[in-house]
Length: 71
Image (cartoon, rainbow, N blue to C red; front, side, top):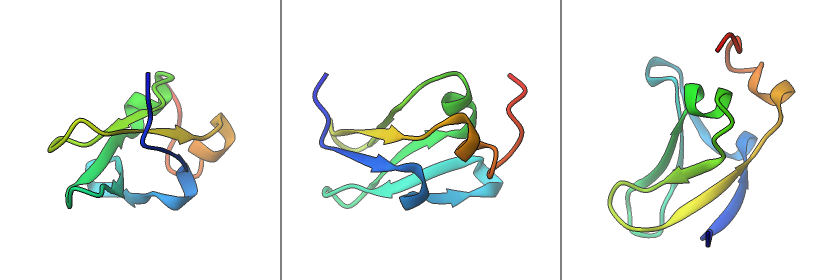
């Protein structure tokens, strides 16, 4: 799998109402990955408008800053 970039979770925008992290994509849209996906071990954020993907760098401790991991 080829990634456009690798981004630390702290560098992503957290939208609590959506329980989702966002990061700007070069196409003008945003990469996105939900808190639930991260809790399930997913590390790939995708852009819905193009084929680019980024790898999200995080650990369980950093996720606890955004909610409880009870999945």
